[in-house]
Length: 331
Ligand code: TXA
Ligand code: MG
Image 1 (cartoon, protein in one colour):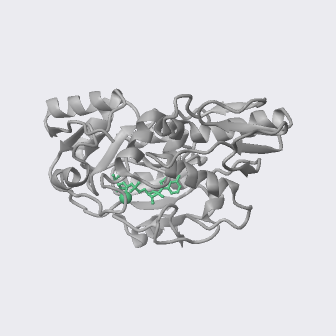
Image 2 (spheres, rainbow, N blue to C red):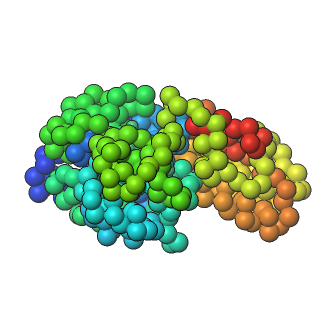
Image 3 (tube, rainbow, N blue to C red):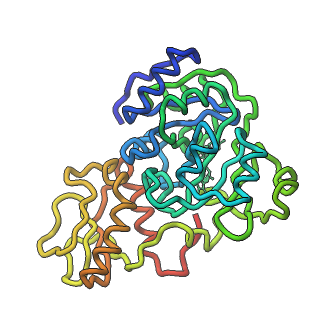
């Protein structure tokens, strides 16, 4: 990718205002939280979120956490039941991420949640982050601000080690107090499930909620447990990969000029940009499911995607969608 000038912003009112302005323009801004530095982008802007994956060099689309200045703001986007309200009261602001169902009309881009019907939300306990989120005025998607496969950064210098020239700015709010990532708690089902241990202990959660199951996290490369993928969005229609032609009973996921004869087409990127295609991928799969079914299609034919930029992550996702159902290894 082309090198960009990474602005180093101080944690003063001018720095925070500049960082918020960049986020609103769809730019990438790393910022400190109490846990680790996050690589932030406007969570409602699919292109900005795709740029996070480009900058991190992520080989696949893991769901990202959305950051909010308050529980009230978070619970406008996800549905919070009594359990969620209780843990939010006890631990927010703080190092706890809650997985909850998206509300209808939730403005967060599908790519942010990797196509899932749930969203990870968190209110960080850091005065500078809170000011930034308030000024940004929208949910901010932020994975840890490191290159994929590297350790999470706990200072602005760590961020620059990995991402200088790849992101628009880093807001330097000093070292992170907690230093490990947030605890991820899935409250989208009937049983609370711990997906990732972190800054809030299991004991503290159980004191508040009662028994919490231990689960394997989605997207943790080290823990490939079968079945996890079931919770990722899989299209209802089967998927045929590397399609260079399209049959009459197929809906087409196009990348560049489509082959002749396609009746139901979702164009990922006319110009062949893998970043644009990533931003539109989950929207496209859902649209083809609905439109394809309406037009009597029995399959989605997916055109080949080049292996450059986010192409590998898109192909990874499509291969999973195309694998025989029930035999897909977890992520
Ligand atoms: O402390 C933290 O959580 C930091 C700071 C920046 O907030 N962020 C962070 O993000 O660690 P990341 O992307 O490195 O880790 C997010 C974790 C992943 O394990 C991901 O799979 C899980 O949260 N996650 C996010 N949304 C999810 C969802 N809808 N369902 C299941 N897991 C989800
Ligand atoms: Mg991480």
